Amino acid sequence: MNSWLEKRFHLSEYNTNARTEVLAGVTTFVTMAYVLGTIPNMMGNAGLDRGVILTSMILLIILTTVVMAFVTNRPFALAPGLGSVGIVVGMMANDGVSPAVTAGVIFWSGIIFMLISYVGLRDAVVKAIPPSLKHAVSAGIGLFIALLGCKNAKLIVAVEGKNNLGWGELASPAVILAFIGFILILVTKTLKVPGYMIVSILITTLIGIPMGITKLPETLLMAPGNPLGNFLNMDILGALRFAYIPFLIALFVPDFFSTFGTAIGVGGKAGYLDKDGNLPGIDKVFKVDAVSTVVGSAFCMPCMTTYLESSAGVEAGGKTGLTAVSTAVCFAFTLLLTPIALMIPSAATAPALIIIGVGMMSALKNIDFSDYTESFPAFLCVAFTIFANNIANGICVALPIYLLLKLASGRIREIPKVMYVLIAVCLLYFWTIL
Image (cartoon, rainbow, N blue to C red; front, side, top):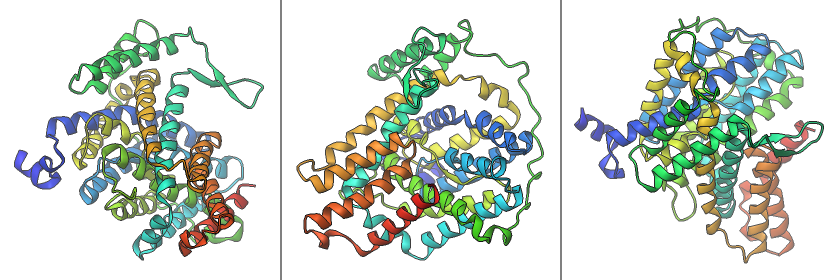
């Protein structure tokens, strides 16, 4: 078995071992486990059967994550993107779009992604984005992950009656438990405890039982629902009506840029990036993401995408596809043991996200802050990733400003022709969300 794993995943080449990779995969799973509750509930509120969505989602996570592992040998796990879920739910619940047409829109979004990935446009697109913005994407994602952790811990909350964030109830059990978990991770990491992150999360989960945060399940087993309940309920031709074009763009642009951003951000955390901030083999990541979205559309599943929480596995030492396979195996167990997975409270995983996010901010050191035309767009990329609560928004704000500053400084020759196309797409994206 060890020789097969070595041959398949090249563990020694990446200075890792099977034990570390498996623990890292479990860590990724634990930080992603919230999708088991959130996404079926969100889709259920739009009128779809929660049981069908849950089972089909788990199967798609397993399938696409294993494919990602074997095709790319990267520790990236896939699941429906929460941004895409929000758009899809809004289409059905607020705009009255049928599930069949919605699935068709998801399908065409994946097809566009596939065309860009398979006909060679992907390389041109990625290379057109300057290194400073690539590093800014990584830092922006780090801040985004840290904010997500703060929200999950209820340390930062939306202020009622105001359009801003503020402190939560700092003396609440959830915040106290998150603080305990934060200290545990810092101490175990400093002491170099093997699997320190998953160990800290599990200990925090147990501490949460007497605090009333960790809810023990009423049953340990749950029969999976029918995964084929929505299978092939698609209106592919109906989704091509002009009225649905804004939805198509709104799904495609975040999916494309989020995949790019996550791959660069998590890849940078793992030490994969070259001197220009590029991720070798990113074309394979794009291809798997694109095909996964098309396959998921057959189940009316929002865009399957590489998950930011993969960074938790990287932080735990994961470097190869074996980490992703381990994550997929954990999700396989949830087909029957969903209640146990849902037992882990978000307050227990939140500290891991905060620490990971802060660590990713180190990418900013690679940006030349003496060059305003490079540093200001990079700042905007980071800022609007947080302010506008979306990775794609940060990139779409930064690219036009980057072009503007280069034009104003007389450095137009530094702009690749493909960037003009990207900026046109960014402007079109903003038009669709006005």
